[in-house]
Structures are given as C-alpha cells and as structure tokens.
Length: 276
Ligand code: A2P
Image 1 (tube, helix red, strand yellow):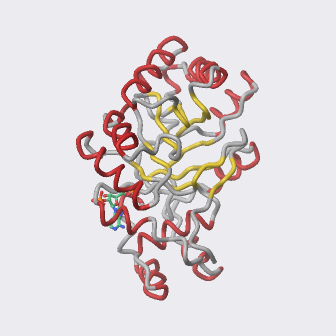
Image 2: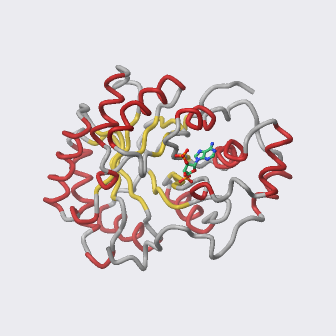
C-alpha cells in the first residue's frame, strides 16, 4: 500500500482529494495559520462556507502557502442568500472574501424547503459553472426529494451531496440514492463531532493498528468511498488526521463499525424539518 493521498473523480471530470480539512467553527483569525500548516502537512481540500465566517482567513492561508493552483476550496451558499439573483451576489462576495481566481466547489448549504428557493438557487449555480467561476457545483444536506427536483427541473446533477455522516449515522439509504445518480457523498461531522472517539470498538481497532480512534474513523470513510472532511482547529490533530494512508480496515473491522449505526444517531438538524 502506498502513502499516497486518494483522489476521487467527480461526474464532471474533476479529480477531488478524498480527504480535506473542515473549518466549521474555526475562527477567521485562526484559519489562515491552520490552512497554511495543513497544506504543509499534505491537505489539498478545504471546506468552508459563507456561514462559517472564515472565508477570508481560509483564502489568506491558501495564498500564504502559494498553493492557489494546487488546492481545492469548497464554500457554500447561505440560506438567507437563496434565490437566483441573491445567489449570484452571495457568490461574488464569497469569491471576494476568499481572494481566489475561482471557487473550486460551490454548494447550496441546505435545501431550506420552507423558503421554496433551492431550484432557483441551483439555476444560478449552473450559470456560475457555465461562466467558469465555480469549477464544480453541488449541494449539501439534500434529501432524495430535493435531489430529484433539481435534476428533474434543470437536468443538471450535483457532483457532490455533503451530508451528516459518521459511524453512528451512516445514511445508507441516501448514499445509495446519491450513488445511483452519480453524486459523490461527502461526510460532514465525520467524527460525530468527536463523540465517537471514546467508543470501545473503535478504540480496540485503533490499538491493533497503532492508530488513534480518529484515524480509524477517517479510514472507515475512505474505505467506504466517501469524501471526508474532519474538522480540527489544532495543528497536531490536523496532522494526525491525515496520517491514514498507510493502513486499511479488514472486513471484520468494517462489520464492527457497521454495527454502530443508529436510527437516532443524527447530531445536527434534520434538513427536511428545518425551517431556517
Ligand atoms: P479540535 O478542533 O479541538 O481538534 P467532526 O469533524 O466530526 O465535526 O469532529 C470535530 C471535533 O472532533 C472537534 O471538536 C475536534 O476538536 C475534534 N477532533 C478532530 N480531530 C481529532 C482528533 N484527531 N482527536 C481528538 N479530537 C479530534
């Protein structure tokens, strides 16, 4: 097995690094240094959002490392900016804050179905892609009905659907729907926001490989073909979380982790019920 970072092809031909750094809750002023150090550690994918308030810091970190042409930056449209014209304006603002030539992957953050604007917003993303300002476009927190609607009404399939996904909430049904459509599944809160790191089964597997529980869980996402963006605001843990390319889980390990799935394992909001 090589230590090389795995890359996954998206339906639009883009080759996306399968592991990235999540920046939810990372303060803007810390983001610059963390991103720069993460690039040194080997990260090539960064996941931010207008709502995280740290696009400026993330862009600055990428530029400080001189890595504009080597890294992929994802950012997301916030719910209040949904609608065709507002999306175009919000995109411009994100691009300005990031200070990068284009946005590699632009996502609709939530379907926010009560607003009734996600199809119009998706049409704006299609235009941004046609203009080359967003290189790839996708969605986040979309359920089957939202995916079906945007693809039916526009004919354009999102390249990724970023959803809450971790061993306690494995989302098998939605993953199957994504796969059938050719949509890559990306896992947010892949470590269950840290709650899974004390799980006994995970700790036992980790001890066998001389790895940490976080590394085992990240490996589980990779071995399941998921794009994974563990969040850490700590340089040592950021380095730890990319040390996962030199081992692979056995079918027995996989079966043990599969058994941690719970119907009520969701931590974040239910996208279909959310009214924000
Ligand atoms: P911190 O930012 O202090 O490192 P998720 O990606 O599932 O949302 O999990 C993020 C949470 O897990 C954060 O609280 C983060 O804390 C913590 N975390 C991330 N990586 C590790 C690690 N390798 N070991 C322990 N905790 C971690």
